[in-house]
Image (cartoon, rainbow, N blue to C red; front, top):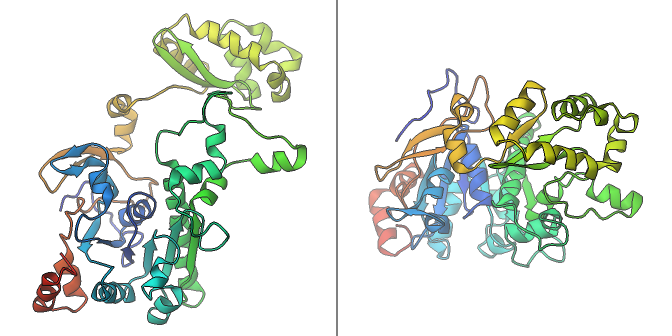
Amino acid sequence: MHSLVSPPASPSALHGVRVVEMGQLIAGPFCGKTLGEFGADVIKIEAPDAGDPLRNWRLIQDGTSVWWQVQSRNKRSVALDLRQAEGQDLARRLIAEADVLVESFRPGTLEGWGMGPEALHALNPGLVMLRISGYGQTGPYRDLPGFGAIGEAMGGLRHLTGEPGRVPVRVGVSIGDTLAALHGTIGVLMALYHRKVNGGQGQVIDVALHEAVFNVMESLIPEYSAFGVVREAAGSALPGIAPSNAYPCQDGWVLVAGNGDSIFKRLMDTIGRPDLGQAPDLANNTGRVARVDEIDAAIGAWSAQRRVQQVLDALAAARVPAGKVYTAKDIAEDPHYRARDMLLSQQTRDGHTLEVPGIVPKLSLTPGTVRSSAPGLGDDTDAVLAEAGLSAAQVALLRSKGVVR
């Protein structure tokens, strides 16, 4: 166990909350990660043979993905075969004592094991059950396989990413999965609050990947409803808001958000174009949008003659929001990240030291903490099952049958 953050003076925000996590890869486990960082006891059920596939995704250090080290910190691993009846019985035993169940199976999987909402609520009436799937638990697409990338496409995001007329591109991270996880986390917290203040009943939270993406798509549908307008890809620009774009420098790119009325005037003064800053038709956003190509060209001509840091210094002095496009190296070397504890040193169970992301959001009285490093497969099987009332002999028998590891 490796503590990275000083323990809070008061109990953690989710102290006493027990979560059983039955998801794998990204969406469900990211929710479990977030709950665990704020004090929940997260018991992760994994298949005994190989565990969560995320253990082997992307870059591997001594047989384990470094991504896993972040996604699964503060969790306890129980290796349990849910395909066997005895494994399902053990899962029910753990769920009976849990506050929250997180699952991301295809709809109908839990029902096929006799573990649907009705059965689990009969066992544990207060259970908050988060179900994350591609298309939700109802509707004509419910049985189709769905990953985050498909949710991004159906939610409308992929159509807007990329350059006009070019192939749609992905954001670069699994944004569909993490959006679903964050919506699921919000749902869990609301359901726990409801249970506490309104009578003690649990409920089901149904999160579809594409709906989580769609929920952050701003005015996409109202614009289509009111005007028949289909928003299109616009590269690095923010359509309908000007100026807000990426501009070339001698050694990279700078993002500039000069779309506030007073900010725009300061920006034009800084780039030596007070004529644009004082133009009556550019005093508001509507006028600037009409002449956005001209404005972008003026900013780009100015920035192209300077290095990134020169542009940032000049715009900071003028109080114009601007920033460079960060790489992982930039983040790792940035003093602001370190000043806000967004880069932490984490010890893995294999003895390595990794720099990992800190915790968001930051609570003043009950901040999130990293209390333990990510577990090996089945590291906590014996301890968790002992807490559930099984003897060492019973666990040994189950292990001999391949039910647990």
